[in-house]
Image (tube, rainbow over all chains, first blue to last red):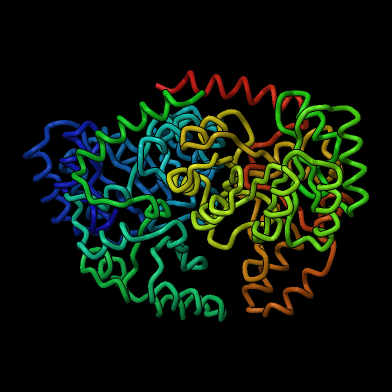
Length: 292
Length: 292
């Protein structure tokens, strides 16, 4: 949720009864500190920070997280072993995002509190094996004893009920909140999510770091390059820097990476984040009661 | 379910309370007639025939289906318009397998009775857009008024409950029954399904007709060829003929296509098909009652 999830979105989600998450992957350390403090100025309960471990400012952000006493960290995109010890020593609840059974077992062995189980349909950084939420959730639930939080493909209460029927104890929702009033994404990015259909995302850079995007001129250029067999260095050059920021924060839908989950196809409006949380609760109850 | 689903499997599923399906995609017309008659000799209720429309003996098989008065046809892999009229005129219930909202709407407009909504995690022939069950089911449910049957990623009652929470009115289950006592697949194929882990299937021939397989020497050869940019004709030559039969029916796990769904990772035993149906019922009830 880089460029999307700042203190305003986290606060709105928290106030409606969800766990608000700050996306640190697009913040320098002092920006993250600002967001933590702003969030705390309006919300006194628990919240989380998502920390992609491959992020170049990760180490500085981790210092801020520990200094500020963030209650929960959700690490992703890297080995949780790197940060497990300092987080544990600081008394911070540590959850890690996984996309395979083996990774979930590793998290459990490291003493983590829970795992986020992320299916192939999720937006942004994506695992190379393509295991979907339907297949991944029950296999991870069967393999570990710590709680499993499902992510990928969930944008309403029906999806939450489905994930919990598969054994998840909670859900992590990204793209649905990216298209909310309080999301810090550019209006053009939000319009792209709302406009996408059921077949409008694609996974690019499979040989580098796979990423799920809404199809645009840039993603087509990458797929063409991949079909022509460009090597890793050539693909890195094609990727360049700041492609996510360009699309998500600056609204350049031609040359930026429009990172979003496949469930964008189901998203058709731009509500307040709190209304999204309330709808989830209502839709979940309806989905459960409809089950024969 | 080519080479897997003959009259013995269909009868066992039917007797346990499911809808038994004959997989016509690996049968010549007279073989299909034999299976229909054998099934009828032990089962007097409804059953279905799955008919892949790209199959070279499709037209002859369709004649047999109509002559024998098969009650339900599930067509797949092609345009349902080709067979909708003759099936309707013969009073046969027609269901078609779709992987996109647009295809589901087309089926509804053609007057079909239901659609099977097949996610990217499904085994064998696969749609090129990669929309997963979690994302596809609710979007198709929202788009059409005819019943939606979910397929792809479902191998136990938890999966059935999840699909129905997303709005499906039933499920179609393949790989779980491929690894059953009554499946006509080779014991080595069944062992490959049982031995697969959560990351052990792959989609090959994306530019031709995408197909999901358990990874083996052949699938690696295809992926390497695709990475090197082989064109369609070269890929067709590499595919050759009878690859599915070789793996599934003859047990050649090196040079055959081990067609299977991604949910193979969850399958660990080789029960009677009737026991699979009974487990589904039990697990479904448990999954529903566990929902908070």
